[in-house]
Length: 229
Ligand code: GAR
Image 1 (cartoon, rainbow, N blue to C red):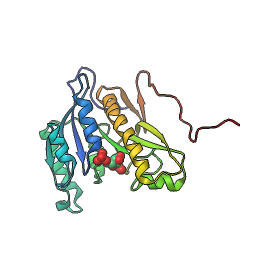
Image 2: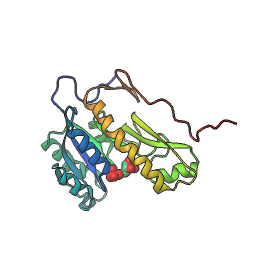
Image 3: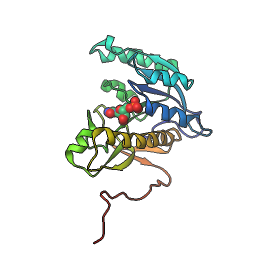
Image 4: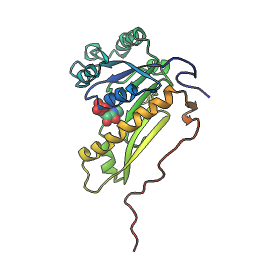
């Protein structure tokens, strides 16, 4: 059994948020971490693209930003990660949150951060990993979908599941309308998942993530809603 993240009594872990684009999950994490009593500190936002809109949003929130343009490294993932790792060390980072970070890591990098790196994906994993998860969900005709926060493993959009949030899928949904509804769930679950990790409440039991204490949930969601008669 592996206990990820910090142990009780340690100072607040310093978090790096890695982005490639819009940065709405990044903003949700930054805002949550500014509230008194949040058990982690957002220390830096790192983008692998100079044109990521999230960079300006992070700066507006007073968070330091770093850009490491991955394009210039081509397929040399390890060389990119060497630069990334030194930025993480420089900022004394203990936890990583991937928030729309669209670059794959080597197995070595993932292994080094196992139990300390979270990702969010807009589907109920293990369903619909990879690209276009909203279109994948609509094409499969599922009646509920949602978002998943998980520990990162070498496989894309896989790894022990920390938290999931569910939305109904409507008959008239398009990938855009479904994505808007799921995004609002993402903004709720990601800060909460980070809170659990940073406060030492998660433990990894093989491929399963367990939460210590009472795991509360709102109950059940049935969609479409059953009608009588
Ligand atoms: C989010 O919907 C996130 O779940 C998704 O990218 C979007 C980034 O938006 N991530 C993945 O699909 C990972 N496979 P944001 O930049 O506004 O947070």
